[in-house]
Every structure is written in C-alpha cells, then in structure tokens.
Image (cartoon, rainbow, N blue to C red; front, side, top):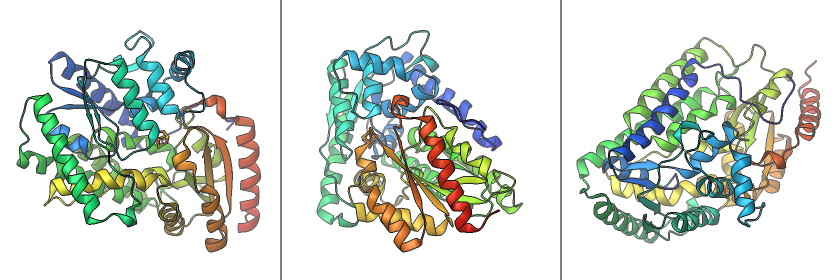
Length: 418
Ligand code: SF4
C-alpha cells in the first residue's frame, strides 16, 4: 500500500463500520435538541459532566471531538486559515486552532458535514484539563456572549497523588456544577436517574476494557485502524446507545479472537502507538500491514475508560473529574511511563511508534524517558515519528515511510524474521 498525506483507514470489523450510523444519529440528536429548545451545553470531554448532562436532560456537545470529524471530512485547512487570519499562532494545539476557525466561519455552510454544531446555550468548563482546553473556552465565551458560563478550577494532580482533600474539593465543584445546571437548564437533578446513567457509563467502560483485552490475542482481532469506535466513549458515556454499540463490537471481537482470526493473515510484528492518532490520516495505521505489522495497543485509548463506583455516583464523578486528564497527559511522567510499559508487556509488543505531536505538548512530554525505559527495561525498540494530530502541514509522508520502513526492517532482524 502506498501511503498518502490524508487517508481513511481500512476497517475489518462489521460492527465498527456501524459507527457511521452512531455518529450521524448523535449529531441529529444535537440539532433536534436545539430545535426543541432543549438546553444544550458545550464542554470538554473526560470530566464527569457528561453523565450529569444526560441525567438532567441537557444535550452535551463536544467541540474537541468535533475536530477529528472536521479532519476526517477535510474541513480543517479552511478552519486553520480563519484562525491564522485572527492572529493565533500556528504552534497552538490543533484542536484549539480548528474549533476557533470553525466558530468564526460559516458554522452551517454547505461545506460543513453533519449540519455542523448547534450554537451553545451553556459553556461548561469543569477544569482539570490542559491550558489549551481552558483557552478554547475563553475563546468560545467571547464568540457566544449570550451563553451561560460555568467554570471550575480543578487542580492537575498526578493520579498517584490524589488525596482526600482533592476529592473533597472536586466534590464541592461538582455540587456547584449541579446547582448551575439546575438553574440554567431548569430541571432538578434526580439522584435515581443519575445512578442509572452512572451504571450505564460504567458498563460502557467495562465493555471497553473487555474489547481491549481481546487485543492481547495473537493474532490480534482488532487494530488501531478501528479506534474511531472511541467516539461513543467521548460523546455517549452514560447512554444505552454506547452500551449497545460496544456490546456488538465486543461480541464480534470476542468471536474473532476465539476463532483465531487476526486483522491480517500473517501477523509478524505487534506494535504500540503513543500519543493521539493523525485524525486526517487514520490510514497510516494500515501502512505497517504491508510488512506484517499491526498496531495492537495505544496510550490514547486507555484514557477513555475509568470504572465508576456506582453506589456513590457523585463521588465517582468527582474522582473521574480529577483522574481522566492525568491518565492521558504527562501530569506524572512516572505514571505514564508505567502505563506504556505495562501495555507493552501485556500486549507482547515488538516495537513502539512514538508520535512526537507538534501541537500537543502535554501528551508528548516525557517521550524520551519512555523511549529509554522501553529499551532498557523491556528491550522494546521504538521510533519517533514527527507529526501533528490535526495539522497535516506538520506531517511528511515521505519521512514517515522512510522511518517506518527502516524501523520495521530492524524489527525483522531482531526477531529473525525472513
Ligand atoms: S491535551 Fe493536547 S490535544 Fe488535548 S487539548 Fe490539550 S494540547 Fe490539545
């Protein structure tokens, strides 16, 4: 296969192909909510606010998740141009650059897929994320001055350092968020309903973990080329839709694993991908296949699943609001290194691809430490690929191919593959 600068991935799972329907229905639901006058809140993912919204009949919308959709539909260059014209630096996070350009352009023009995003009634910024996430919401506040704004200033604490006083504070902020949603959304939080939503959210996480476990099989039945299924973990946590979709994926992956059906016929090398995928070119995950390589695990996918204490839903969501972001970023290099090493052991990884992501410093930090630890502690070699999760101008396909080909040849030699 000849790689291209922008390309969709080749998918093998029937259930993963169903994702298109789930994506379309989600955006239809957002537009329908707007038409019916249902309160609609824009928010970052990974913080426990999604479960509150679904429990309180508020429609959650994710500008961050909209960026991969724009990248997949080729809308990103136009959005970047608008952002550049506004004077923002090209070195900023691609999510920030994309959403800034999108909201300052024609949000519902004929070139915009899925009808675009319906304008927000509320802007929810529950904190705990990186600086660009915070700045995205400052930009949105200026762009949509009529929207009601909630802001919480949660600390970034390494997962292993979270103490009771952090939890108490997060719980207090959760209480403030509920009071805000009740007033702005006009309905009281029903704790029984919240419990139901948290149970569904936890079920989705359990299914996600199970799906990931089958990827340990040799050959693996599921590769990173299908990782777009993570859409439901971002936008649908706490709904029956997520549970039904992931159940179908789990059943198919399990069946393939039990039947010994791999992603490709002759799996020779098992690879790990660190950092966010290239949303404009998910096809790079298939590039390794020509030499029998399959990406069987990634750092990014691990961050979307966090089991919840369903007996204590509010406390569970408060903990989630503290834990989600440090699980994916480098709040603790030590923890992230441990996560990568653990995954490489569990998934029998032969080599790691470290995506040095130009526009995401929080996740790229610490990669040299990870590279060294992989080699010294596990004897797993790695290669650094310079790219960007959103901007294809920061990605050279020729350099990618040259580095990957040389890396794969070195892995062949190490494993004694003919
Ligand atoms: S974690 Fe990285 S990709 Fe995500 S918003 Fe922050 S800078 Fe951007």
